[in-house]
Structure formats: structure tokens, C-alpha cells
Length: 214
Length: 127
Picture (tube, each protein chain N blue to C red):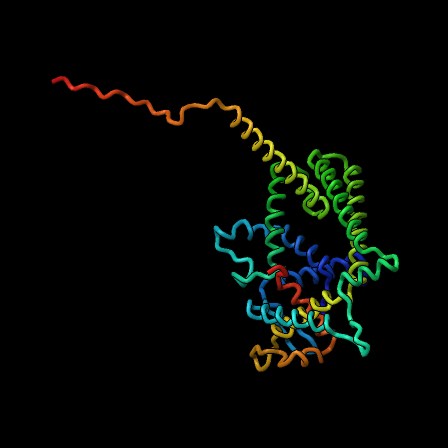
């Protein structure tokens, strides 16, 4: 008799697949994947490539800053301008930042309490209470972050960052052709003309290999 | 194609970092020349995060082994973070107190001559 696979077993199988995937990502500073029967590789950019992308990012930022409509009115807004506009409409983004910081402080207080309780080997009930408080705070912080990201998505600074990641993806992506890895895209235009799903995958992998502060 | 959120990836990295397999490689890396990654330099963001968590869990597992804390902290990310946060805070406090005591001790010290050498008079030679 065939046994029905339980939901928990499916969850476990999926978890193992995901774990294998992450383990593979860790093995090397190059990430290989297949998209529509074509093998792609995203590698860590060199200093020179990063510098090139950075220069392009500055140019893009200035271009967006100077872009105007037919009446000479700026087309895009900086983060500060957007914040002022939202404030007029009753959405205070600085207030959201303050709330996030206050939650962080609160989280640290509960972490200290939970850490002490763990060290003193207190009851599970007490530990669970503190854990629940921390989980609630993390959820609240996630909501704030998501809201802020959504509200500032269109600002010039964010558009320049998205462009930077796209440009890096264009620079460092290689594809396998006749058993040889070659540059996947000849021009940035060619990169942009690909499937959105492929571009998203490439940018996602770039975000995993580069260290933002360097 | 697998697409995971950054949050999920970090969760899985922590799971790998606390596993017996990677903890053993981490602890024996220098002795046996075992390698964690194919690349030796130019680490990715993900690899750096993984290394940080290997160190983090190595400390935590040691604390569990010497009975400082129950092993329930290992598999629970919130417990693990809270315990390590508390531990580091206590350690910082202890270091600060130690340093303050040392400074206090220095201030109260009676000033003595900078040189404590004892010079003996040269013995006169008998002609």
C-alpha cells in the first residue's frame, strides 16, 4: 500500500534541497546555474570592474538628477525630496526610522533578558515569553523596512543602486559555449533585452557575491 | 530554478555552520589542511557570513560543552543570538571593571624611585 507523503516530509525534502543549493553557493566565489538549457556563471567582480560600475553609477545618478520633462520640471526625485512630499501627505519616514531604532533598543533589552534566563537555565515558559516578544519586534521591524523600501523605491538614489547591480551583472556574467566560458553579453543593451527572469537571477546572484562596503 | 530570500539564505547558512560536518572542518582546518572553499582569496559576501557564523557557533558549542548553557541554544537562532549578546555584554562589562580597577590602583600607588637597583660600593683593593 502506498503511503501518503505527509506535509512535514515534503517540507523536510524542500528544506534539504534549499540547504544543498546554499551549500553549493558557498563552495566557490563563482555561481553556476542553468536557464533555458544555457549554462551561466556569475563570478566575483574584479576591482577594475567594480570601479567601472561605480563610475557608471555616478553618471546614471547625474543623468537622473538632470532629467526634465517638456516644461523643464525634474522628472525624478531624490530621497530627501520624496521624504518631504510624503510628509505633506501625512507619511513621516523619519518617524518610521525612529520607530525602527526604538524597536532595535527594545529588542536588545529582551535579548539581554533572554540571554540571562538561558544562562541561569530558567523554565521553558519564561524563555518562550521572551522569545515571543523578540519575534514580535522582528516582525514589526520587517514591516517598517518593507514599507520604507516600497515608498522610496523610485528615488534617484535607489534607481542608481539598481542600475549598479544590473551593470555589474552585465560585466561579470559568462556563458558556456563549446566547453568554454565566454562573456555572456557584448553590450549593456543586450543584457537588458533578455528575459526579466534571467536578469533577476543574475542580479540576485551578484548580491550574494559582492561585499557592498568594499 | 531555486529563488530564496536573503533571510532564508542566512537561516540556512546558520544551519550549515552549526552542523557537525562544518564545525569539524572549521576546527581542523589548520591542523589537517582542510579547505572550506575552492577559492582561497576573494571571498564572497556569503562566504564571509558563513565564516562569521562558524566562529559564532564554535564559541556557542564550547559553552554548551562546558555546561555554561543548555544545548537548546544551538538549534534556535533567537536563543543563540540572545545568549551570545548577553555573554558579550557581560564580558565587556567585566573588562571595563577590570580596567577601571587597574587605573584606580595606579592612582593610589605610592610613588617610588624609578630605579630599584642596589649599587654596592666597589671593594677597595688592599695594596
